Length: 147
Image (cartoon, rainbow, N blue to C red; front, side, top):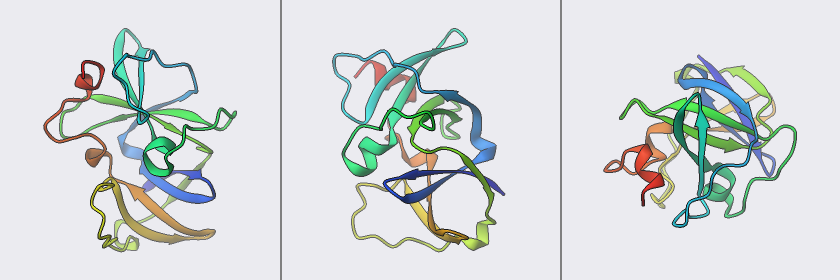
């Protein structure tokens, strides 16, 4: 199974490539008045308003750095079949990691339940991002813009 690998402050994270629709350059998202640090706003993707989340803000408590390797990853949420944009730094690698290579991550803190199991790659540990856990279960991704 192919994964897109991105790095935040030296730590590696993976997203299932099959869930990715497109990888876009970093563009300014339309900020809404109620947007939190994790909710970077929204973009117009082929006439559709797509909410954008900042993975560095969610994981590290800081905004993503504006670099050539920082991208907006458009992915499809299985729970709602909606698109969501994810700002990720250093999104430059594709790697094959089999599902059995991931080991459960038994954290006591469940507030970041989008941080999934961990696999060992050639350059160290890689933590999988659970796309369907990024958004609250009771909210549709398009509701990020209306909160």
